[in-house]
Image (cartoon, helix red, strand yellow):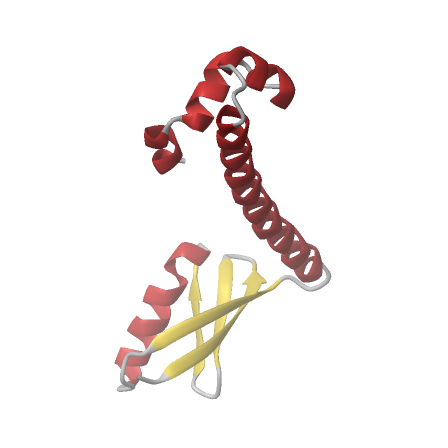
Length: 125
């Protein structure tokens, strides 16, 4: 399947969609970019394919990329923290600590500590 690289550039009425060496079309909002590109390609007789849209925001592009990267890092860190919390709660219970004492040691409520040690809750997290 062919891949089309598209650069979206802001203009007065929405976005210009520059499709590699193929041409340019427009859309009002970025959510419509892939559909508009595919419609344009179809009109020109090109086969549909994978459309990769890169948004050109000039100097803001690097800030957006840093923000997205930090969000992904934060999600990973949150998942790691949740797994470590569950393992720690299990280890504390395994060492004989009560729910109250385990909750105190971990700095969470007794209800939260119970959730961390519950297999059903761990599967939902």
